[in-house]
Amino acid sequence: MGIFKLIKNIFKRSKSGSNPQIVIGIPGIDAQHHEFFQKCDAILDYLRKDSASANVVSKFFNEVIELLKNHFFTEENLFEIIGFPRAEEHKAEHANFMDQILRQEAILNNSENAETVYFINTFREAFLSHIVVFDKPYTNHIEKLVALGKKFKITTLKAQTLTK
Image (cartoon, rainbow, N blue to C red; front, side, top):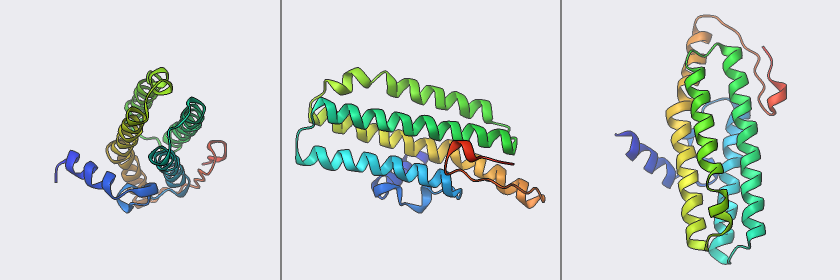
């Protein structure tokens, strides 16, 4: 199955991020992924029922941006702990992802419902793609290290709680 077809299938079945194909196996990071999808699902449900005011859309956008900043910070700290060899590439992807999203803020705040729904679905799909393409490799790296006898104590419920 090609990557785009895989992502499309995941996207269709990932209500609230519950699809096991996007679970990476690190509870704190999985919880962050889940929270992102829950927020997207909530605003999409709201938009399907009613027109969203600029305040509602702005609040959603700000919450998701903060969530992503914390999530990316958590992952980047994890890369240092595990010595992930593709950390710089992954960090660059985080910066690119945030840049693309932040450039849409003014457009999003002045959009009609249909445009906002399209943006959120595109945003959601891009995050799914990120998980499949970029997050899975670092979990594979952790599995290889563990197989070699390396031990980690990793708690990732909050970025500040990461430890070796």
